[in-house]
Image (cartoon, rainbow, N blue to C red; front, side, top):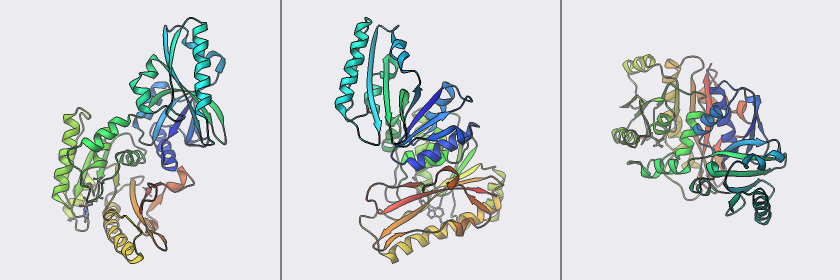
Length: 388
Ligand SMILES: C[S@@+](CC[C@H](N)C(=O)[O-])C[C@H]1O[C@@H](n2cnc3c(N)ncnc32)[C@H](O)[C@@H]1O
């Protein structure tokens, strides 16, 4: 059985995320093929539907997944034991597509069901793809199916959706959590999820040394990690505490251990380094200072000032990590770049990593791992490192 995964907007990042989650399940990255248009096909004997569901439910960067339909002739007959079928057709393409042909195909399918005595109803996508709300609200995957037509530069194939991203739960955590510090900049919930997954781990202890209001800690605990959060600002610690407690109150996490403490990363006592070493941290996932939100291009000197702040924090972080990290220890971090009149400005990761850390990005995808909204001045560049 082959499976498809459809990524969200940031395809390079999603590709890296899926490779890392597969890795945490012992699945080789050669089993995954990028077939263009944000579609990935997983082809391996090592998985079951149950495992693929677990994998999909961990992901932050994917919209839908399902079976590749290999035998089109037996697809509709496979629903003949149902009395009533609700279905929809989505056309997933990076080379255009027409809503008209979706309506025609849906009518043809309805006619087929009528000919075999099954009553059916179909949903029409608002554009060319059904959205998550249409699929969930109509219970489409339980009471029928979504049939996907994939048409990219590289492939033409069909699929039956098995699951769609639980967008509502990401939005709920994002908007309804009790504390958000918008002044400091809050990491998007989905990016926090992706970053936790880039550790290639399923369990263990994740540390965010710049935890702010705890977005990374929240997503890590949703994934089942125990978490450690620290920040220079005591208010940030209180906010993270309230947010994690809220996840517990909402019954979104159970059995997670967490510990929060105030720490200036530039000034860590030997005693604390010792404690951290003893804690057996599995990985660090973090985003330090991004600077205040910017509406227009910054001057080069402003970018230099903002980047110097980030650089100082990372120099301090690497100093500690070089003492506590074992070989293979994963570090996932964000380095901002700023749009200036003269182009993008950022910092070179290798100055921190030196020879002690390997940057893994190119193992996952040729492109850069970026999270950037259209026309935004600040880009988040994501790096995955492993201690040699
Ligand atoms: C961009 S925020 C992190 C946001 C967080 N990822 C979230 O989504 O809530 C950066 C955090 O780094 C903290 N910070 C700044 N300087 C620090 C230092 N020297 N040591 C530790 N934390 C520091 C700030 O207090 C702030 O909470």
